Image (cartoon, rainbow, N blue to C red; front, top):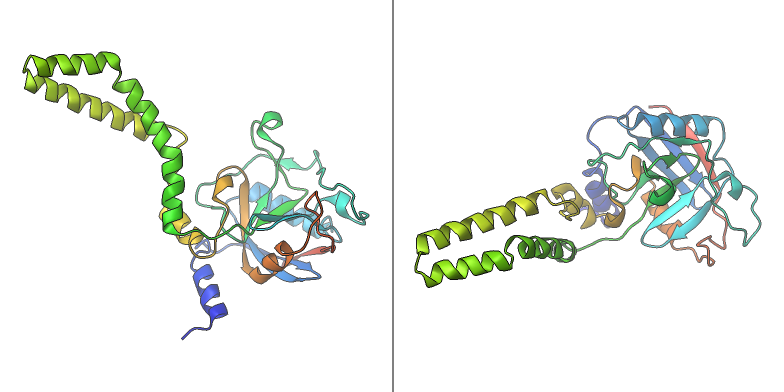
Length: 270
């Protein structure tokens, strides 16, 4: 029988992006080391992160924003030597790149992501590559994922039904039935059902977890609520337990750990 840690690593490795990647980086902290692969199909983020790492931009910065069951965020230059209680995380407007949000890079545990300014000031979701965050997230049952889908999708379908099967159509259907024009009534009912199905298929905003997302969220976990909102440009391949150690730290009102977690980033040879 596989030991628990070996079994966990086996499950996690099965979720890794299958295509071999060109670059790996090590993010070292006083709580342990983590190794990540950087995705080749997010070259803007990959190249920017590599350049900043080689320039020492991230060294001696902190994981300054830690939210258990969600993310650990660090790398901001204003976290270096920041005194206790100081608000951190202003980022660097000069170090932004266009988004590379790709559906197949999901927000599973260990995903390496780029933060950004909110939509109201950053309509195109440009990333601030001067810092980064790693997803911890949480695990879900399949039943919980089903419930999340229903909570989002049922109101969408109900609005479509109300719009298509409106009072005029209801009156028309009732009239056909009253006049015993059953063939026409059936034709009308079928056309209404087809229109509802078509509009629902085309409706934006639905929540439908893919098989890959379900596999990730029910095993290693993740943060489904930010899917397709931030660029995921890498994923952890070793040291995943360090995420949990950092996420377990006590934090202040700004989510900064009371115990500083210092960062050093090194580009590794493959």
